[in-house]
Image 1 (spheres, rainbow, N blue to C red):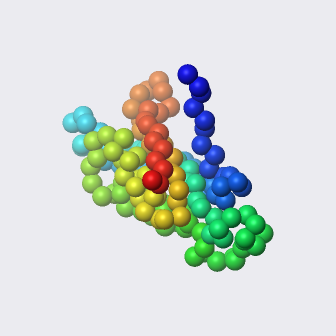
Image 2: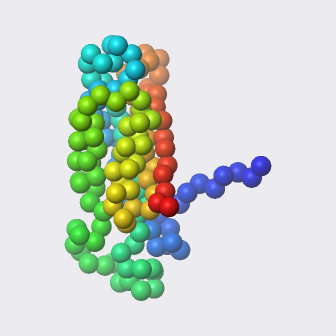
Image 3: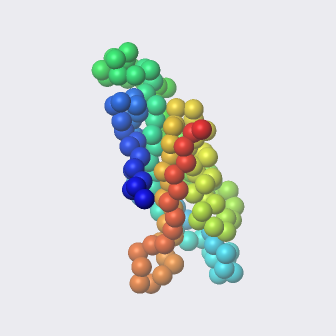
Length: 139
């Protein structure tokens, strides 16, 4: 069986850039156990987004491009959306939260792929974290 090729989020040949958010730690109401319903717990969220270049390819765009927020995916808007999702109510599974975050990221048509990692930080005394990573691509 051939090894799976790792996705390249920043790729000149595909005219994509990588936008990322690292180590966003939020208090979340998450989990299936009764004690997890009683109090929020810390989750760490990491995002990697493959974002389509706004100029249609390397040869047809300026080297730098316009210095305007509207031409890029706004990571503040993404983070605020993630915060709103987490604050929106109890979620049982980290998988569900990760999928919802991926959907949020892919709502911007320029985002071609989203890799989302959600980790519960206080689950095991002898482990740093437990969680899930999902990757979703635009069809």
